[in-house]
Length: 264
Image: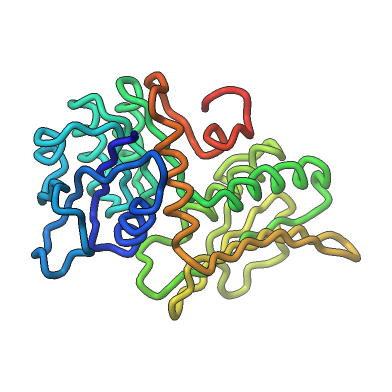
């Protein structure tokens, strides 16, 4: 049995995780964090320990893994709490600053930790496909990444869009210096090695990502469209089950899915 703590149970992802945990074989919700009154929380089993701070929850109840999709400002704090108690962490929070990400990664020296901007199985298969296309097509194709999310999403471009662009850049021997986040005015011809990232926000879009490879006389598009947050919650729970018993280290969803031979 994988004893699981969910942070931010009143959020969109928190509610989805709680619902799926109730149906997940071999998993048990033992703790949760929330700063809201009980009347505003999803229905939780009576024996679940709930508190405003993760560190206090972990002190109260034994746990194997924490699943965190809360604000990027809290992720480093949650990672330190897991490190202090020797609890594994699945972190799917996006918008981490370089400093916050470095803090989260440091905790992986002491506990097993899956860090991924997108827990969807389909998106992680897409990452491999994008890298393969970039290597195969080479320098003769212009690459653009377009992402769309709901109006409430705070970070832009999305963590998944950045990861897709990173995979293209790695495959082509480039880095983030090649990224172009916006275009306006008289920008001149498109630089040959540029990788564009464009952002759309509106409505209740769960998440859409398309990678375009523009060539002379043809273009290829690889797209993923999420219609339910359940895909991210299901992937996170799959990662949580996979983490139990793993040695300390930094992992991502490609490790969870067996799509690469060694951890990052």
